[in-house]
Image (cartoon, rainbow, N blue to C red; front, side, top):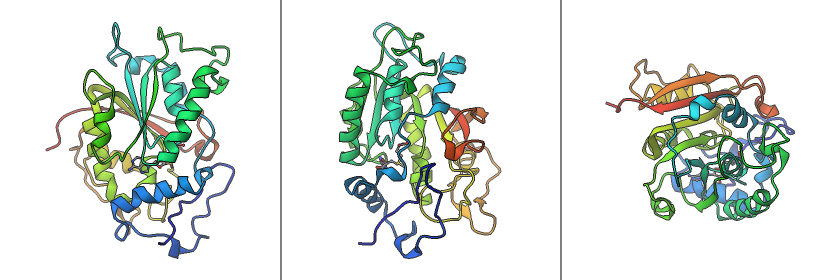
Length: 295
Ligand SMILES: C[S@@+](CC[C@H](N)C(=O)[O-])C[C@H]1O[C@@H](n2cnc3c(N)ncnc32)[C@H](O)[C@@H]1O
């Protein structure tokens, strides 16, 4: 089988997009979706997670939680109910643990058994003795003061595009999430999976919930091959316009629709002051809520 290899996602290694032999890349047209999942599992099984592993939770999400509490105030919580968060393609689970430490019952999903095993181990240690990098204020090495208690960090093996894993959710109130966070998940998917990504997000988000996307990479031409796939204008196309996220080869931008027929409304669009080095100055944070039904 031809190897499935992303370009490095890490700041310490420059992107080598054009220097890698094209023969190791299978285009979306020749890589069925089920092979995509096994490609990621095989990267985990052969210890290739250093390609994307940043070694800590996302500073941009952390700042959003701490500096913009108003965005999260509508998220349902009440006696006996922690708000529920979801991180698809969670990898080692850094953001899952950070959200749990900020009071969310958080579910990380990954298609790789090895990723989930690694994440469970990481979470067990980190929740017992949290690192300072989980908190904006390093003197607060405990659960976020805004929430009375920590949430839980839960990990599931499953394919985001399938539904089996939803029955494993230990929830009293359905399979919807109050907060969904995407970082380096959409950019890990080939372009023919993008429309389904948007559809699944709309199915999994609670009516008052928020979808937070740290848009990366925005510096890479979306026509260039291999993950991380360039995502310039792709979130807007998928979520606001209801487009398919496919890239027009002549312009390098998403195939156009100028309509706003997507299921989501963008509430916030900002350049985070802090993000990982590789995206510093270019990453954007977008916050979305469900709007009207797609026509
Ligand atoms: C680029 S990595 C990012 C991991 C993590 N978000 C991080 O920042 O470290 C993409 C992750 O998505 C997982 N993945 C890919 N396709 C998936 C799918 N269809 N369902 C669930 N997880 C998937 C991969 O196994 C991998 O761990």
